[in-house]
Amino acid sequence: MSGIENMSSNESDPQLGKGGHSAYVLDERRRAALSEVDNAKFSWFHVKVAMVAGVGFFTDAYDIFAISIASTMLGYVYGKGLALNSNQDLGVKVATPVGTLVGQLLFGWLADVIGRKRMYGIELIIIMTGTFGQAMSGNSQAVGIIGVLVVWRFIMGIGIGGDYPLSAVISSEFTPTRIRGRLMTAVFANQGWGNFSAALVAYIVVAAYKDKIIADPFPHLNHVDYLWRLLIGLGCVPCVIALYFRLTIPETPRFTMDIERNVTQAAQDVENVLSTGTFYHDPDAVVQRVKAPKASRRDFAAYYGKWENFKVLFGTSYSWFALDIAFYGLSLNSSIILQAIGYASPSPKTSLAAYTALKNICVGNLILAVAGLIPGYWASFLFIDSWGRKPIQLMGFSMLTIIFCCMGFGYDKLTANKETQGAFVFLYCLANFFQNFGPNTTTFVIPGEAFPTRYRSTSHGISAASGKLGAIIAQVGFARLKDIGGTNRFVQHILEIFAFFMLTGIFSTLLLPETKGRSLEELSNEDQEGFIGGVAGQSEPKNEVSVGERRV
Image (tube, rainbow, N blue to C red):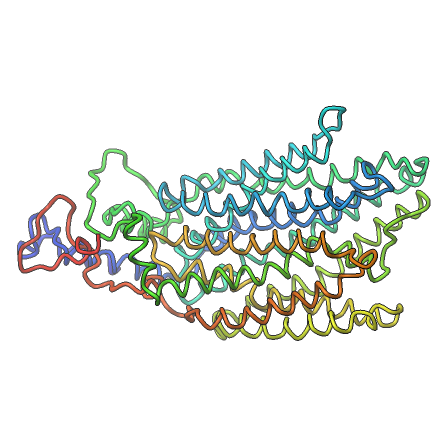
């Protein structure tokens, strides 16, 4: 017999209040339901949650990082001198992070106010709309195609931003404590496959159009216009596949219990979800609200006004900010890095040279993904629930500080010839590895665990948006600084700046708690005994303490 069933037998005790719905009964029933979720056996339902959430991150990474290759293609077709100018290149690359920042804040807040289920799927629709709009963009006398792409990529970014807090909190709130880190990492690890797929699709379309590109009268590489449209447009496919499942995923019991304050419905949902993987909502059922801490501006200020709570939010936000300065600074400019070390010619002289440059950029990005990105995610998957989140993040920031120092201060020697360029590529792959076997994964996981349910999505959105602010600063800085002293000559100093931010990430990590093996309620820093103060609208006996009422 489950803990929830045990509690239902207590509801008939006349000493516990009218109808058995005293604060004590409801409080115990809530904790029994949460225990069911935290100690549940791994099931197909958990696999479904990981797959449905993971497809979103696959799509996010595909759409974000495909532009690193597509910007070179756009330059061949629409740029003067076969390259976008610095403002155009910056615009198409920074538009998505700006939209993502907006989406993370907006959807993070809406998921705590309206519900995880009600918002899940809407962000995919926005992504599909933005992606399709990019692929269908045209050039005209009145509106340039780069400007149109910037608008569509901003809209797409809003949807991508919504995916971060929604997928994180849904994954954490449904998952047993002992495997929570691995399941959240499995969701986030789809970023690596999305990055890889973007490079693979780019390689396939470049190979498919080889003869037509070579036959184009140089410098009018008209067939390259097909390539970037196919590359970006195919990002719609996984969204279409995942949309139905996102729209039909159940609401998390923690939202129903702690935000809608409907303990009875949440307890029933837990039983149904864990036994059948589905849930049933009876529209005629009597809704019984309970007294519990309720989100408000005053309550938010009171909760985060305590240093022990604020330092966690600051730690997750700054750690993500510092990490994304380097992560997006590298990922969105991988083609520039490859060109800087002589892997691809930035200014081809023939149609054949243009094809070769595109092929080399695609192959280079495939190598970077396979050699560093993907293994890093799955190394985190193996160790995150045994070693812990905080040690992995500290180790990652420490290694990245060393690696970026080596790449930056040794840049001239490492890129001097083909023999030493191999060492530079190795360090670049190693940086990708320790970003993902390190803070890129843990900065996603920890904010999805470390806050109370009523602010979990909002706090994750704030943390993630701080990261995107770092990505925007990195992209703007990279674009404005990289050519100081000559083409790509300032790249070495940018790498040194990355090293400094990785060093600061070590100190922000020290503010964070270790979330391994602890329930979400324990991590909230709120006393769970007496969390429920009875039924809303009913007076409790004078000898009972209504903790929830006092907190509201």
